[in-house]
Image 1 (cartoon, rainbow, N blue to C red):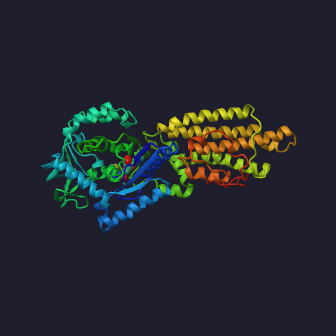
Image 2 (cartoon, helix red, strand yellow):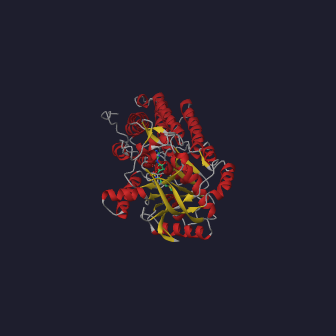
Image 3 (cartoon, rainbow, N blue to C red):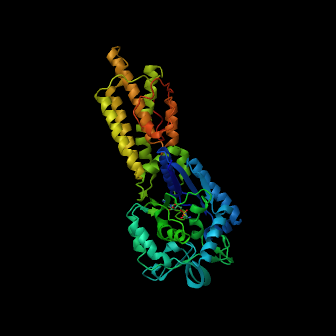
Length: 510
Ligand code: MSP
């Protein structure tokens, strides 16, 4: 079995989770589930980033200790991910001893190797971004962008990690590994950034200014810079498992340059470890053109949509709507359009018709297909084409197009039902009509089974539920499930299932 190690960014737990956090975990889960279905031995890591200025400040505001604060907020993130059906194997918290131990070991090793040195630093510091700023970061008018929040000038002794020393190595590495960053066009952005000489990275914060962090093993008066600490989660979590390098570190575009594309590969290289095999960089969910975040105050609560429409409708929307790598505007209207037209009216309708007509015309037992005429042949052919297009699309993270094709197959199945009109056949006593009736019931049920098998990594609970009402138990080999095989012959179906209730209108009688 091929092993496949995938990670998400670990979220800052200094507030409530929002749609951006939820999307990344759902996307990574969809990839993890897809790779499992393809037979890989998947290890899926997520977690929380719990140190640093922002957490310390938020805890103070609430008048509680940082540890108590992160215990509470990390639990909130985690419970959201459980509700989202995120199939993570491990959830690492950077305040855990197993993580701190590895961070300190690595710091000590780098210090002993001479990769870390002490120097005086004078400069401008952004508390919000927890980063030192340079002259080139100033706005044309001389001020600082509001993304930096309050900026103050400080002078202090700090420890620095030799980034500059590895700049040429990194340029060579990124330039010669076209698969290192997905989507590929982001490689240019990284190489562009690397045209300027790198400054060594300040990896310490004096404890007078920031106490909430991992103490430097070689100088107890400092804590570790939060990014240096956080990035190492991908290694610390699997320290005893031999899983490094990860196949993918999944991250948002705001944390590609410099943390994941510059600091991270250099940190690893300096320790004698290989970079991750690839970085998968997704875009942002926007509202009215702006990135959604805690501080914009208008972040849509993912919990509200989850409660109202259920986990799979939510997952489906995020994956159907976003082209991985690009940005997407979030609106409740668009959510409702997809929910109504694709889930309720298209898929929901196929489920209703299949259960209802099987119950009505066949006593709830699925018959065998007996006829293969033009309509059946066309549907079989469309299935083969759909399946053969969808697998490579998923392998290339084009899940939105894969879902579109899956839904087009559902639409075609509904059209097939219209064509065969089983409700008319049911009125006839002719043997040929009865054979066609049995054929149409078997065909719609098999199509439904296949369509939901194809979406299982996006809507796992719905797929399981539909299999259950179809009286079907899926086998262990997912790719084999995707063969048209009349596997439902003789299955006993449930009489009805309300999957996607329509929010504005009462459910129509079938
Ligand atoms: N703690 C750091 C990551 C450390 S990884 C070693 C961090 N945390 S975060 O909470 O700000 O963001 C976590 C992830 O959520 C990032 O990958 C970020 O890009 C993603 N998103 C945050 N807002 C987002 C949107 N509006 N849309 C999509 N994803 C965005 O950065």
